[in-house]
Structure formats: C-alpha cells, structure tokens
Length: 251
Image 1 (cartoon, rainbow, N blue to C red):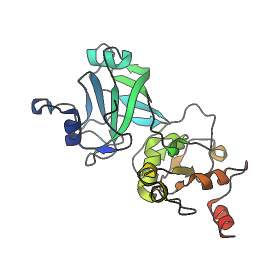
Image 2: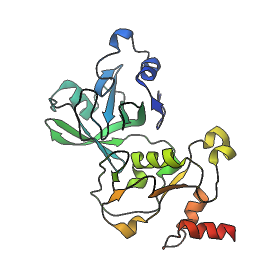
Image 3: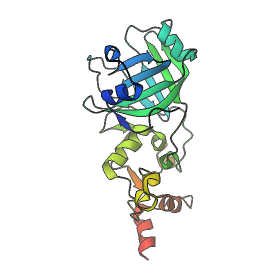
C-alpha cells in the first residue's frame, strides 16, 4: 500500500507521523541520506544544493531516470547498499528530493536500481517503479538522443527530455499554475479534486528543432496547456505557435 502521494510535499515531521516512527528513532539520515525502516529504504536527496552536513553530491534527473551519489565513504559491499541494488529483503525504496534545504521534500515514488555507475563511492542510476497517472507525462516532442542529462538549480535546467523531467515540469507549474495559458481551461474547476494539478506542459521550442543539449528556463521555455490545445498545437508535423492557437480560438 502506498503511504505517500507522488509529487506531494512532506516535512520530516510528516514522514515521522505517517510511518509512526518512535521518538528514539527520529534521528540520523532522515534529512539527507538514506536509511532502512520497517523493511523499506528511504532516500532523501538534495538536487543542486549541499546537504545539511555541507556535503554536495551530484544528484540529478536524466529524463525519467535519477542519478544519485551515496555517502562519500560508501561502497558496493555495504549491507544497506547491497540491499538497495539487489532489492532482497526490501519491500520498497522510496525517493524524496528537494532543491532547497528550507523546503519540504517532494515524494518522487518507488524506485529500483537500473544500473550501478560507480562502486566506490557508490553512484546509482534509479528508475521509477511506478508513476503517478499525470497528464504531464504525455510527450508530443520526441527526440532520439540517448545521452540527455540534467544539471542545475531552480534557475537552470540543462536537459533534452524535459517534458519527462520531473524537476523542470514541477518548476514550470509552480510558476505558471495549472490553468491552460491558451484557453484558460481549469481541470480543477471542471472535474473537482479528480482534476486537481492536472495539466500538460508544452515545450515552446519543439525538441526536434533543437536536437542538442541546451540551457532551459522552466518558466520561459515551458508552458502549461490543456489537452485539447496541446493536441491542436501538434496536429501537424510543424507545430503551431501559442499565438496561432489563440488566433484560432478568437476567430
């Protein structure tokens, strides 16, 4: 049974309460790091900022994959690391991320090891075991690149597959909201709680026109649009511009 909701924010106190963690166990790697609790493993990862201990690990989203560095003194033979990789004796591995130490963590879902990139210190590429049923995961602009990467902070995202990049999409929605920027359709207003936070994120410059890695500003290069407008934008091989779609609606 899923204890947390994907894309929702959780403080340390929220996590203690949901898991019913005894007071004497409410310490250790619950801020940043990783720990085992009740046959599950919890990973708390900063992206683009050092942890509370001052250590700065190169954690980042590579499209839908998450590249994560364990502690500096970690190695592949450590019991907890071996459990993460093999998944033996572990119900779930839960990933929480944040881009600011003053903010709560965002729950990213259950993850499984795709491959180990480095043995000492340990560096793992994770894939998400389950995805939220979110319309944001729909991708219209496809690329054939196989080496897309993400690096950066809230002001910079370098990536090709950013429609599928949780951080870029999240920053776009945090800035613009979830109402369609073309026709003002509001899923929440029409469908209630079932439609809350439900929106497409459109890449203003089509990926096939870029075909290379470049610096992305999630608030300027991505825009929230409803399913209808997004489908019309991409109805032809040459995508229509936002102004062209607004012109169609006006006429």
